[in-house]
Length: 167
Image (cartoon, rainbow, N blue to C red):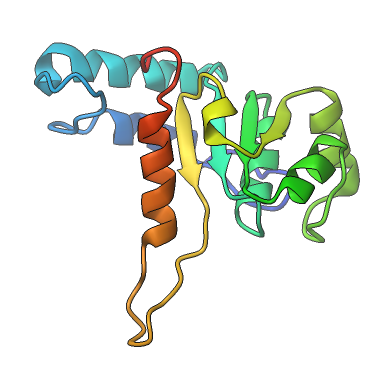
């Protein structure tokens, strides 16, 4: 497992490799068999992640998303957070921290170093290699998950694909 991060979480970057090279897993949008194109794309992505070169996107900057974004930025990954709350985005871009589990100085530093930026529109996020979706899952009256927020994130990303293909 990886070293402990700024908010106490441990990230196992070895898991990234095993997840991105699972036989039969399709990771690209070309609809080609994994053996032709997908495995190579997955391997390149795993290499970018291991080398700290991947651009990370975190959709939702609440109590889960903000610490995740800060952790990746603190490890040197160029990270962009996306949130529909324009005030929250402006505050983060000003280096303000609203999460008591994070050190104010860490948030200020990653923003000042420009390893962490925030946007209100996922279409403005630029060339992101990996998106983490950290939005609440509301429950229906019958306590079933209502995935409307997740669907809207996926829909917006489908309408605004990254300006470059996955590595």
